[in-house]
Image 1 (cartoon, helix red, strand yellow):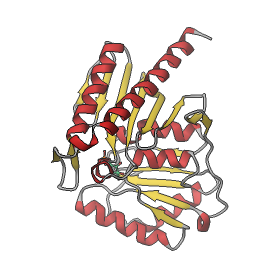
Image 2: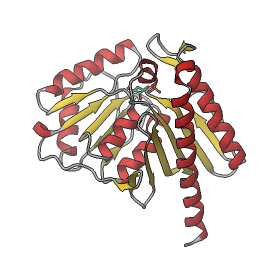
Image 3: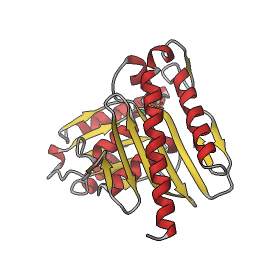
Length: 269
Ligand code: IPD
């Protein structure tokens, strides 16, 4: 094994370790954390005391183990580094589910080297599952290798999506669902984009899309999906479309989505 391979292996191991440890922190501390909540961009955009505590744990642990690396997180923003390695963390993706005691919430940890995501881990603390991948080495759920599904047409395609917190965007997103629903098997809105994307990697969903996701929502999961053979399209702008789908229906579903977008709606891929 080359020293570069060994370094990537160590980064990947650390991503898995911190995602798992942070997940345990989040799960164990829920009862106390949900008594202390605030809001961000709108009243539906909640932040619990655990979002901030967990991100602090991630930043401090990474700083201790990898001094000099940059960290980019949902709650505390950017911490510059000098090594060319950047960690992209979401301490709780699916905060509303966490608040309500629903199991679909996750801790997401991705690691980038010179701007390329090389490893990612998404933990689902309520079930103890850990989705993870290392670039070029496949995607796994714990020890099981993940593979995309292969639906034969849109009528047997189960599609996940999500809605942002801004009211205007939500209305537009609802219109898209309305236009799509009669063409596909069904829609799911589970509440954690990171997990939705991992579910496409595991064939629990055939596709997932959402406009306006943040990098921390999808950085780790997008690598996991790509390594499972899923067609992954990352947004080119902040408002853009994040899209993942099984290759067998990807082009057809994307065309369908584009056909139902209102031209007045200013979105870009
Ligand atoms: C949200 C979830 C949700 C998606 C939203 C995200 P948060 O992240 O991923 O599924 O629809 O757009 O903001 O707020 O729970 O970290």
